[in-house]
Every structure is written in structure tokens, then in C-alpha cells.
Image (tube, rainbow, N blue to C red; front, side, top):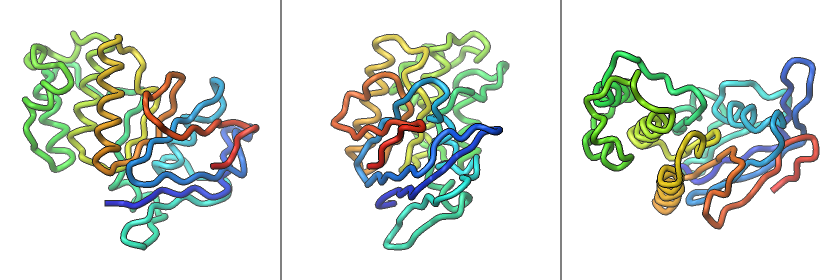
Length: 208
């Protein structure tokens, strides 16, 4: 299990626009961090930078495991569970087939029916993904996140497209993950429902 994620004086530029600079924070095992800021402030870019999808202009980001720093993006990636805007579903696959595919992709089988029950998709198990609502697609993405069993969750608007029950499910899963020693960084416009730290992203960013 990783002990912490640390970011030191990060700067990020998209095109010719500097989204943020001098951004520093630290998240430890069992902790959640909410990223807040206006649309276009750089919340998603910061998540992508932490995941290794984008390079930072300056600064560094690293995980700590057993006292060792893991700074290379590929090294960090094996600890990260990603929930983004794109669901990456194959329309012709059933819900059960899609989750089984993700299990093979990540080298994890697990109890797939139990996972579908946990996210409220048992009744849709045999339904092709093309017929899923936006909220159901989000629930399937949550099942995939649970299936990966990665300690660091990076969540981009995790409550998007979900109804009240779905939002309560996300808050419960985040609390459960942190309670088991995991870490969560979430870009969100809604409260996580936890006693979490908050970081405002943008040119006015504060350091934690």
C-alpha cells in the first residue's frame, strides 16, 4: 500500500495558457482531497498530470511506498484507478461482458455479480451497453474502478449524470475506500460528504 502522494510546485500549461503554477499538496493514506475551481481552471488537467497523462511544465509529483519515491508516470500508473468523462464501453457488449473484459484487462476476476450488485446493476447484467442511461454507464464505470483495486483513485466529476441514490453510492464508496487506507483526489462541484481537504485550482491556487 502506498503511504502518500506529494506534488511540489507544479505548473501546467495547455496551449498557450498557464492554468496553474507553484501548486503543492500532499495526500496520505486514508485521505480524500477535493479539487475545486471554475470551469477551465485546470482541475481535469491536474488529475491527468498526476495520472501521468500530461507532463508538468515544472515541479514534480511522486508516490511514496515503503519509504521509496515513485516519480515516473509508468510507475505511478500501476497504483492509480481512473474515473474520467469517457466511459470506454463497447456498445454491443452486455454489462456483464463489459465488466468481465475489464477484469481480464486488469488481470483481476473477482466476484463480478457481487460488483454489479454493489453498484446497482444486477438487473441490467444482460443488457447491451448501448441501452444504458448516462447514470447506468457511470455506475458501470464505478464497478470497473472497484475491480481494479488500485489504492489511489483519481475521479473527474464522480457525481455527474447520477441521481440522488447514485450520488449517495459514490459518497459511500469513497468513504469505504478511504476507510480501508486508500486515497482519493476528486475534481468536483459537489461536496464529497467527508471530512476531506479542499484545494482550489487556478491561478489563485493555495498550497496545502
